[in-house]
Length: 266
Image 1 (tube, rainbow, N blue to C red):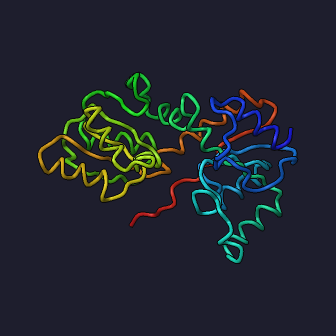
Image 2 (cartoon, helix red, strand yellow):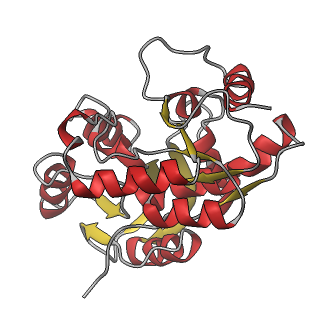
Image 3 (cartoon, rainbow, N blue to C red):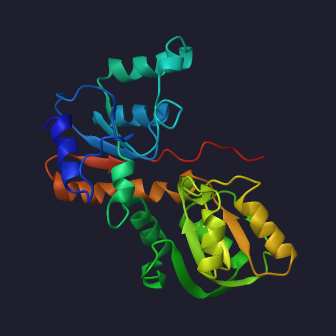
């Protein structure tokens, strides 16, 4: 089975037909290349590519960009030594990289947050009317943060608000969802309309939702944010994606390679 046939099979299994405008594109390789094995990952970093090579896999299914911008544009990189070295590694080893982002999020259930629900064990707490909101057993912000750190393998979390506040109504806005998906006011609106005590976030901007939550807390409202970062709030989806792929393509070996967050903490 070649790369195009694999991708077609995946798109066919999604709720959304092939989108005309999408970042779900072949970022490297040849549609006609026969697939020897697949790895799934949050991001096709150099270490992930090397690990795929060592496993004999020549198709990497990545959720996030390969070439350092949201749409993987490469015009600005044509004379960049880092890009050229990465491209050489890819080409010399006949690696194919396909991005699975838009269709993955648009499938029901969202395949990224399906993985998060598995790791958190929160499926029974989820609101029927909202895929983001949960009513969990009452706990403190500090206790909730410690649980999230253990469940999602988070090295460091940032908190806005009172760490000792009692919370039970929470929303999980992983990845870039906590930026508002094009509407900066969306997370704060959700907090108000869903009567939320806490937001669990991936990315943030310090003058938008975090400012709203800080002012709310300073005014005496029970409002908090727990900020875990983009990688830690999405990578679980790619960890469990091989299970989904084995059901579609049982003849092709598939495994997960963790990209991990890019930071060291001092």
